[in-house]
Length: 178
Image (cartoon, rainbow, N blue to C red; front, side, top):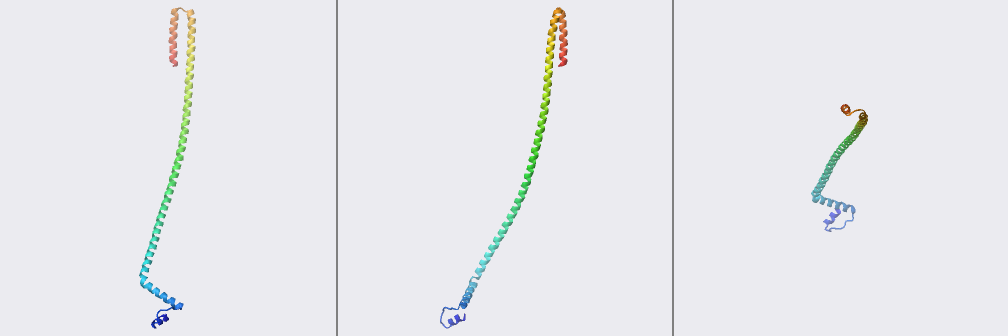
C-alpha cells in the first residue's frame, strides 16, 4: 500500500503493482468503503424489505396452516357426525324392516285364520242347505205318496181336511227350522 502512495507522490502515476497481497487488500478496502458509504443505506433497506417479506410469508403460511388444521378438525367432526347419523339410519332401517316383516307375518296369520273360519262357516251353511233340500224333497215325496194313498181311501171332503191340517203342520215345521 505504501508503494502505491509512494509512487503517486513521486509523480510516476498509476502503474501495475504485481504484489498480490497489497493489491487485493487495497482493492477490497476501497470497494468496501465505497459500498458502505454509498450503498449501505440501500443495502440495509433491501435487507429489511426482504426480511419483512420473508416474515410476512412465514406468518401467512402459519395462518394458512392454522386454517387448514381448523378445517381438517371440522371435517373430522362432520365425518364422525355423519358416521353416527348413518349408523342411526341403518339401525332404524333394520328395526323398520323387522317390524314390517313381523307385521306382515301377523297379518298373514290373521288372514289365514279368517279364511279358515270363513271356509268352515261356508261348509256349515252348505251342509245345512243340503240337509234342508233333502228334508224338503223327502217331505214333498212323502206328501205325494200320502196324497195318492189318501186319494184312494178318502172322499173329497175328508181329503181336504187332512190336506189343510198337513199344510198347517208343515208350515209350522218349516218356520221352526228356518
